[in-house]
Length: 268
Image (cartoon, rainbow, N blue to C red; front, side, top):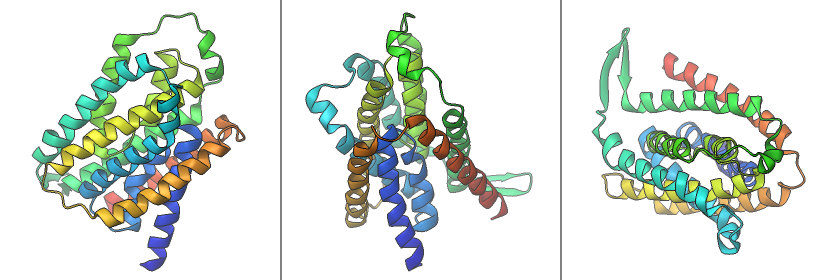
């Protein structure tokens, strides 16, 4: 058990590093780390993940917030719908799902099991986006096509609901939306993504505080110390490591992790 916890603490640090380097992806592993390495229930793990990912993203995006080196319009267009959606899903939708959902093809379906299956499906989608990549993302600031604000706002609602259900920051979905729909340069998209993740994750966590969840604040603060250190280290490396290579490598990693989680859930 002690060995698993040590691996868990190291994984939280690496999650922060990944978030600092590419502005996405690291948070997708937070819930599996909490569930499988710290033996925390999936429902509580999603709450911890929102707090941890939100605070870590805020630590990484603080300099962008102070210096204004992010896109305010994109933050409002995408962020506001996302914040509203994540709060409503954490406050009302998730608590309304019963613990036992019955049986399907002879398999008992529980809320925790459903959360992990949704999460693993999301991991596979994230892996596909990261492995596929986008060859011309650095040139998007020169793209003359008009930004699609309405579609981006709808995407914000959807990503917020996903965040609320599975506790992931959703940066792997936010960054592509910022680039492809709102026509932001990759670096500005990453900075804006961090602040959107911070806002909606922390607001979602507030929804949990109003519910029956019991929070271990000492444990949570310890994890935050590790993840925030990781994001600061990752930010220093972000200009030295080719983002495309790192993104694809991480994509393959979470693809394998997602498949393993699905296998584990169906075999248990």
